[in-house]
Image (cartoon, rainbow, N blue to C red; front, top):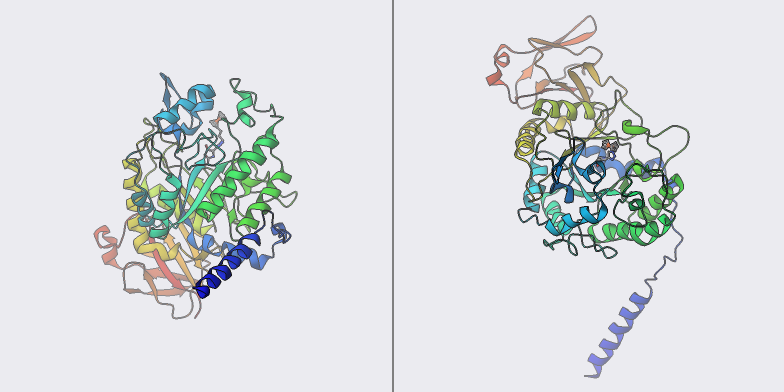
Length: 467
Ligand code: H79
């Protein structure tokens, strides 16, 4: 008995010591992650560079009006409907009471991303409209407190993503049209975006930052993808401070450049005048015209909206999506391809069909995408023939997004002597020879018949560069 009491005492003291040694404030001085070495940066970015392909998900209250609010139609991007149709906060927020996505299937969403070959998924924890997809401790304007659904969407997705081997990441808007100490001050006069909220620091310190702490500590996201940083209240200094604060919470976290004020318009790369906070550039709806020495990710829609719009049927072809993925990889960037699920929780059929086709292509050809890096060699042979290089530099992939015909001239690309070149998805070793210093692959007659090719859309020739 005494022995048990003694053990309880010892265990109790141990627990007390353990708890009391966790201070409210960090006792160790915070690390200055703005001074990170190149080696540490490279190590942290490794999985992200290897991934090359991710899924963007824009999902929130705007999926309910889906482009039409009380008879008014927006011709702009759907998630901006509150702003573009001048809907007062008091009207828009009523949508929360209708948000009940009973058909949301997190396992299906995560599996859809994985099957398409996407290695990470970035979902809107909060878009500019301010509505939150998790039970935020500092907000009532969230899925648990304001909607009839009352389930933790981000929590369910976290589990599903972990199970599917997809890294969960969050988009989070710095701007907030709903919060009284943020941009709701500009409502209902929607055109005074330059009117600063004098209480913005309160929003930042008692709402925005606590929310980000919640997201990082509860869901352990791999990337935080900021947006809405262009508001005049937000400064580069605040961006740097937030970057450092979040990295101190989770050192391996990757954060986009919209955490600060570096980006140059929609092209998304940082201005060159100073070092800005953030790990990668964010071209929006465009792909860089060439390579860059910096990391970057092009985010793009599949139709013309991010958030679901019932009448937007302007879908890009699967061919275009694959061309874009290949173009990004060839130029050393990632491709973040968006879906906008419905208010019921369904991924639009047109998106599902295209993701399925991309997945079939990736099943054969993903080694030409994953773990590739930009290279000093050319990134393309011509407009439709792109090059990727495995990160060890030993293999190049020649990706032809239109069928090359009976021969393929590798131009400036030099295969190793005796390189066994083959088409991915087919074992046959292709003959090639050097003519006037350029390697020319002969493409067999059988492959001239589409039916005999291993895939549609784009064909990959694997070339050994050195042993
Ligand atoms: O989340 C997606 C967009 O909602 C967000 N970034 C991507 C990833 C984004 N925020 N701002 N922008 C994109 C720039 C968009 C400006 C426009 Fe408009 C919105 C053009 C038309 C609607 C506001 C209203 C500016 C002009 C009219």
